[in-house]
Length: 618
Image: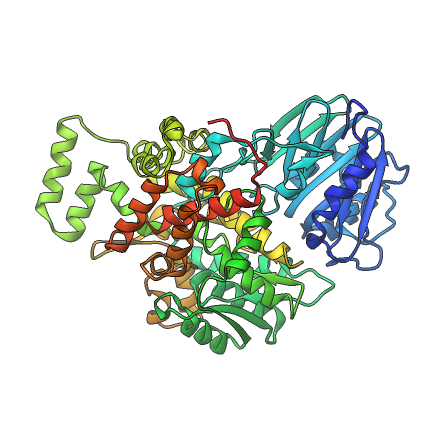
């Protein structure tokens, strides 16, 4: 959108749309009505013959470009038909257009699905832009004085009409903390991410307002037994899987052999009544492989399993992956996600995933134990569980002395600025001051969590607000859409959340023998379906790659870092201190584990080499 007339918006929107061709290989469309221009790339999933975009209402006063799927669109379509709206397609996209006409911005509260869309309202002279409640679909935007631009991917916004985006130095250190840059920030100062559950209104004159339309709270309901919750949760997940299969194209399912993907694969079989195709990646390093469990699950459920193998980093692939994300993105599981997407797309254009189970049903519980040790009440309970008088006495003493530490505040304090010393070691001195600044996005998310009933629910909400959209969903969307593959997560769904938010903590978490584990009810569902204890109650492994091995002496990542350090003119050396990075690498070779930080440094170095025209003012 160009408020000043300085940009050739037709040419610019064509360039931006071309940069996202991989997201929609089945066609393109444009709408231009100064000062607004929309471009769209189509991946045909619903209404293959008449669902091309942009789409308008009857009098062409409202236009939309839409990314995603609306699963309740048939019901909304009938409701809108009864209100007198006239439809020209059978697409979910047109439902949003008429829904906006009928309900205004409140249309977002009616939608069940994953979405990011923009609506040009010519009568009100504004553009309405919205993102789904969970952040399944991305939306990034750039404001630059004379124009406002938006897209699904950052790469489309780096250079708009010859105007290069400037680097965000603070985001460099933020990336080294988490391996991602939490919304709303990006690696560029004037490029932002729209937060999940928010919408924007942008006037034709350039005024921007942002509104949060959706939030959630855990409200434990203690009136039901564990068995009743298990039955209701299984029924709701089954219904969600059925809703997520609405499609005019064939589809399959990711199946790692973990709890979440196995539940989705099992539910899909129940819904279809016959086998489907399941997909899994294997690793040459057997300690990282879950193929045995994926095979067990596929055989028991009755799906056909298709597998791929990762045996080392292919740096040409890694460079493609890093480039695709548009900014540094350090979750190394984007490599197997990329490879499995490449594999799946050879078979189907749509796949279901088990993403979201860890966040809603406390799959990260094992990591909470150390944080909870700061709470004296938990020390006392743990002492009784383990029959350890010292723990009970320690907790009582802490309470009597009035030195109780709020474990969530302690957790957030550490999360907002973890281990600055290691980052200082890696960075040039004139970047050190950035390591002392707490991450504002983390603090803002935490403010939305303090009212939750207990620590565990606070941390769960924090995971849903931060880690899930900024890491998990970003990883999956970019890696899969790079191959023109749509991924749908039935566990990240309004109806599933309506149940999950009511489940009391004690029905998600289990403590025994010094270990805290989660997802009790999901595990109970699989047990009911006949999966044995060895399958259901094994230790969580996660979808990860052997970084620790790759950075050992002789490893491929180790050699890559040393080669970069040796190049005096590499842009890497303007930000990172080669001696400090080499010291971290030497410590890692000696047995300490700095694999995550070293991986983030490697990723940033590759990204910076690809974007060496970006200027940072530290």
